[in-house]
Image 1 (cartoon, rainbow, N blue to C red):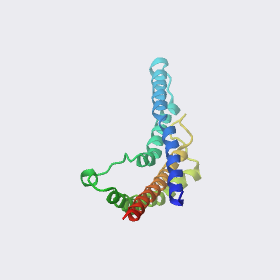
Image 2: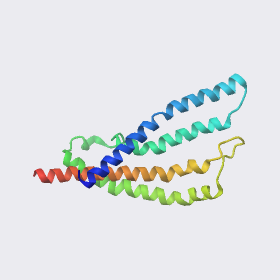
Image 3: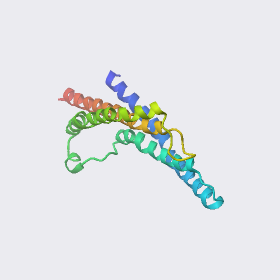
Length: 172
């Protein structure tokens, strides 16, 4: 197995495991929402931490799920022309798209969120609500983590595309 194929396989397996884990979050969100509503309207008890828990789960699902969506090739793409391209042309579009757009965006998100997240960690930022989750700094950490996971998956897609392009050259 070539080195780039081993990297792609490792990243794909990791994303598959992450996807399987994240798939449980909507169920947890629904259960937590039922609990919040039951406590509020059944027993007259507020549960701020549980309400924030739904927000944390939702944020985790979307922030970490971005890389999983890219891995599953379910991201938004304008397919008007792409769907008619040959596998080789698609590989070029994918590789260049990730190099020109995805990776720079990931770098921008990581760099621009560094101070924001760092300050949150420095102060161990907590919820503004009494009884809220005292871990806002962890929630904010999802921003650069999302960018890093997305960059990692973009790297896998670039390597996969280069493999397709290399195969095409070998067959020519």
